[in-house]
Image 1 (cartoon, rainbow, N blue to C red):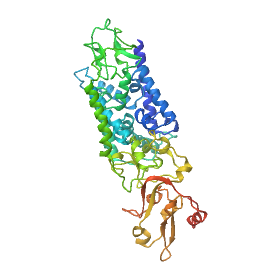
Image 2: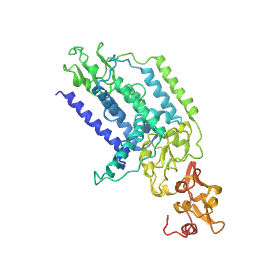
Image 3: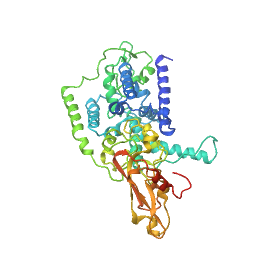
Image 4: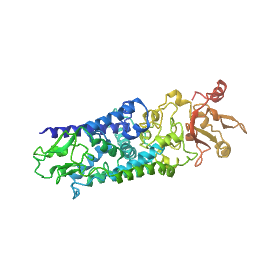
Length: 497
């Protein structure tokens, strides 16, 4: 076994371990898994923390030294494409006729230029739709997580394993299934027929890493004296970047999977230090630079204006979003917070935030309520869209305001006792006051409300609830209940809430 076959095996093992870690982030949330899920491009641009800057710098240095190893070893979407390519080979799907394709530089740099320029102007979702981790996350949240939960609960019901415990099914979202499942499936099908075509045409991370790979210390290169032009290396190349005729490897697109070197029986292709390599095509022309620059200007000037919108009153942002403009400019809609919400209250938005907030998380109080002492979403967000919250700060953060509709209340319509909303309010913002015929009805103290949705979720009135939470465009600090307010709130209860 030559050294490149060994290196390929190491790559496969490492990439599968990384894939398992990323799946664990969504399926088995632990604090230890929050660090690896920071995305290369979005987090490096928008989050100014020492850790994120260090991670971003590490990946830049890694690429400058070793080339695009990130794409083969670390990117979960890249590893998923490798699996799709392998499965396509096993089932013998018809392969492309051309084993070498030209470098579509204008497309692969113009498109990310639009996305990156738009994000600097406050529109994150265009980049989020094509960011590799976000694509992987949406598929995992839409398909893998529900399947995992179903299988786990099936094993629990049949007492197959004693140590398992039942999991709550995440709220179903047809939108997430169509977008998350559809985009991921399309990329996997494309990989099966055309290899890593997404990585080298539409992926913004791939474009940036490709530029750095041009100056990388180590590269895949040909040894023209040893090569017999058998074409085996080009046939196993995932990026279609090996030109056998001219003896050239396009290192901009090469993801350093080492398949080519492992299959070569003549040591004609090697991974070595080389300052300069023969290019498959001249560098970008002045015309190309102007077109790419124009694309960036277009992205900065037009895309944010097209996507700009105002949230609907029912759009409640997750705790830690702080304000609407900040939240929609940072969130890529990766669904990590949705997958890790213990109360299953988070769902991807359709147009509740406007186009700029497509697929970003919102609180749906028909599905659950925001747990009073839970800070999971804010502490697992990989992009800084949600700032980390302590439990004490979370308890006083007003993410929305409650409004009571007197004519809808079951006390008024049925002349019966209820009070479920007041019983479940954790802050005393909703309390009961005397009404008619010895009955009591809810009353809201807005200054105490944190918008957790406990009152709306528990309200028995259907289809329109008698008490509804509207979102705040700016999350502020709620007041603390006075001793008298707490006493009034607990009056007649057996235990405090």
